[in-house]
Length: 509
Image (cartoon, rainbow, N blue to C red; front, side):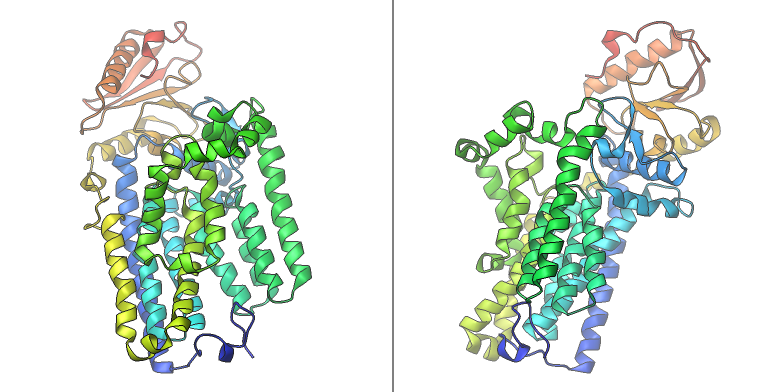
């Protein structure tokens, strides 16, 4: 007999898995269509947003440069923005999954490759939501509603459209892993999902290790439970505590300094502060409570009835304990590891309520389904990237026609082997090379300096910096202008020439 994820035969679970071929075919078609629409819309929106609105961020640019370097035999490396040097990607993150995109660079040598892939893979998670809900809850209509609701989930949309991060693909991989175990697929399918998860980011093993242990333990596969837990933990611990710090030029863990630098200097001091109850009281406030509401409201608080919330909590706590507002905000991507557990919890919570009030589900299914649909509508209004969402910004749709000019002139005047130092807003266009610096770093070594002022309003301090920088380059004997218009200027440095130290007053504000 087929088992549920409780390890009981379906005939003993909350609902029977009935087979209705015609309805099932329609359900599958509906889910696949919804996934396709999701991928198309959020690919388009991600590209538009990254081109202009997120031009100041370097996340997508750094990962694109890493993929480009791998594709061109330059190693798993990139030019670090703060350090100003070429460094192994492992000095920051163990997102080996980026290497998988390298062969595709020969087909589509643009950063849009990453954004489209992210939207497509993230949307595919709805297929596993459908499969799991169909298996657990029985009704194909319920499974379709849950799958489409997953695509309407605002926190998923915000993560998919915020730059590119390999870990944003992890929710789909987690759902695939759970579905593989629950459906009794061959063990190698489970290992494939686990490997994909581990190479998205260094800390993922700390979460999926216990998940794998729990799934296999409940099925009596004790050897698989302990093996998967041990491998996942050893992998993540080795990368997080040893490999990554060993690759950093200063020997420090970049992530720990970035997120927990205010808790102390060094790993021991930071861990001591994190396990101090006073730190928890200080870090958990209205912002974290609001983030929790944004995560729970779109799924009608159903995960609160499920033990899956434990895994969601484990995924969220490290970011809620970090310094600053960004890590705990659902407007970015740090919450993505919690998403699959919240949706697994929603299915579990739905089943529990179905057991408590079977008559309601039997005689008034539209009422119960309407409950979830209502919260999905409310949630997509509160947070999301749909046109009616409160957090949707019309600036995401801005188009800067000057960027097309920049791309043409770059191809005309900058050689593929040139080292480039660029001003803010040009990262995506200039990172398709082994070395590309963010000004003022790299000014001494760069072959070309590229300056760009968008047609939209720019911070006043940034405009002053660009004006001073432009005047310096125009009067310096070390540089010759090869192209200049109102918004974009290119200066090529004479070989071996350098007029002296970079002026202090030209450092970025």
